[in-house]
Structure formats: structure tokens, C-alpha cells
Length: 401
Image (cartoon, rainbow, N blue to C red; front, side, top):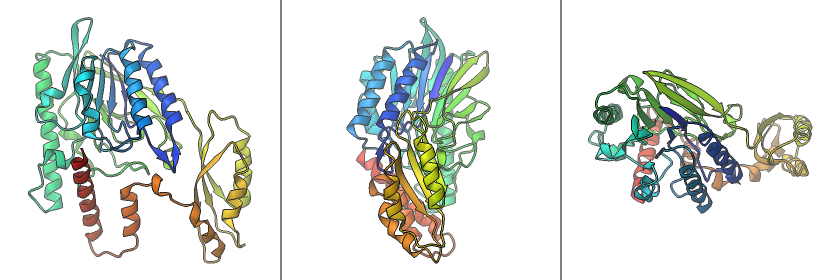
């Protein structure tokens, strides 16, 4: 069985106020070319299809257009699971209609796990089984709510996640009649290693930072989402996001994964995603930055590049905001973020406040974290507040669904 594994598209994302529509459209067109160019048995999209639970209309249109093109491609099965950014109801609303076209969507945890397990066939013969397991939140599993102790709740949640995978594995084996056909699962969670990006957030409570990989049952391959960086460890893999979603991802090469499972052996090849927009981080004095921007503007770019500027402290009083306005004379670049490293003498640097974070480019959690920076805490009070905040957000988002 041969799979293409991708995840974390985040359709509809605003990058410091700037739309990613052109990049996402180019990626999806490229992906159709990939799945239509070879013997691909299934495409797996492992969560975070959208950037928010209420994506803009153009993002939904991108998704629907892609599915329409994918149905017409040579790839005979499409598996889509929800991530922590996705709306369960939003993804599931076309579920039955899409199943008729071999597009299998699982927006959230289900009571009847067999409803999210799909045999994969080629020329009328079953060649594998995919357990389409989405993001499993504490709220959806409702396993650990009886305890007020965060450590106990985290352990209970981990056990419930493990039990969910065990049930899926058992059903998959039954569907495969105990044969040696490949058994594959998806997932949208944190495991393998601690990873952070400006565009990701912790999705589990308390001490459950990482799900213990040893608690996964012995699927032949587990296609994971949530991390925006490609990470491969034996038969577990994150494909990563197809485009950089924050400035701390600009140096990551982006991939989709080409996975082949044969006779119990798993081969994972990485296909690099073309760069659909250049993104730069420029740091230095005002003079250094100006020279760098001139060099960048003289390069050939597919699209106008996005740029983050970090202005180093200067002994001279500088009206940085005015200088940034001057830099905007370069019509073929877009400065979307400015960071000023302040020193005691650089009073005039404060004039740049108007260029900093915009409400349409930061998340509720980012606002909450900024507010916490103003407080002093004793012991674990800060961690408890963060945990409670995330629990409230999950409940509100579930109610919205």
C-alpha cells in the first residue's frame, strides 16, 4: 500500500495580517499533481486543515475545490481527520456526501470507532486498513474530568487516548481478517519530542506534554499531525506543514511524505514542497537592515516576500517608525513584523509601538500569555492558570461546534 501523508495546512491563516491564499492555492495545485502522477492508494491529511474553527469563505472554497480535484485524480481514497484548530461539525457536515466518492472525513472523536476505520482497496482487492483517528481532546473523551489533580487528569487522559487507539487497532485487525495487510492509523497529538513553533500551542493538560509513544499499538504506520516540522522515527512520522506558518519556521524545509508498506516493511520518502513565497528575518542596525532589504529586493521572487525586522539598539536616538516608512519604498517586499531590541538610551525606539502586534494576527492564547507577563506568581500558579485557560477554550470551542 502506498500513501501520501500531509498535515497542518492551516487554510485561512493570516500571517501578521497578510493572507496566505495564494500560497495555499499553489500548494494544493502542486499536491494534486503529486497524487495524480503515480500509483497512490490513499492520501492522508492528518489534521489542522483550517487555521480556525470558523475559517473564511475563501479557505472553505480552497478545501472544497481541492477535494473536487482529488476525486477526479488517480488517487482512489482520501482520508481527512480533524486537528485541534478544526471544527468537528464544520468538517463533518459533508461527511456522508463525500464518502460516496471515497473521501473519508472524521472531524472528531466518535463513540463507534468502527465508523472511522476504512478498508483500502485496489482493483477490488483489500490491500490495507486505515484507522482515521483525529485530535482527541480531554473534553471529547471526558475521561479525566472527575479529578482536580492535574497529574491524575493527565494520566487518565493518556490512558483514554491509548484505549482509543487499542480499540481501533483491534477493529482494524478484525476487518483485515488477521491477515498481513498493512494497518495504518492517523493522529493529531504531541509525541516523540518536545517541539514548539510560534504557530503551535500545547493541546493537552497539566503534565501531559507528550503522549508516550510506547502506548501506541503496533500499527504498521502512524501518520501524525500537529508539529509543523517533518519528524520521522521508525514507523511514526509528522509530515509537517507545507508552508512556514511563523517566522521561527522559515529555515525549515517543507515536505509531504511518500509512504510505502510492503511485507511488513515501511519505506518513508520525503518529497520537498516548493517554496511558494520567500520569508526573511533581517536583524541588525538600521544601516545593516537597509542594505539587506536592498539585496532582498534585487532577488527574483515568485511572490512578494514577507519580512521580519529586528532592530538592534543604537547609541543614537532614532525614529525607527519613520525609517520603516522609508523602507516601504521597496515596492516588491512586505515588512509584516518589526521587533525593536531596547536599551536604556533608546527612548525614541518606543515610537514604533504602532507597528507591533495586530489583533487579527494573534490568537486568544497569545493575548492571555501577554497578560500573564504582567503578573507575579508563586509555585505552580502560572501553570495552573494556563491549564485552566486551555480547558475553558476547549469547552467553548466544543460548544460552538
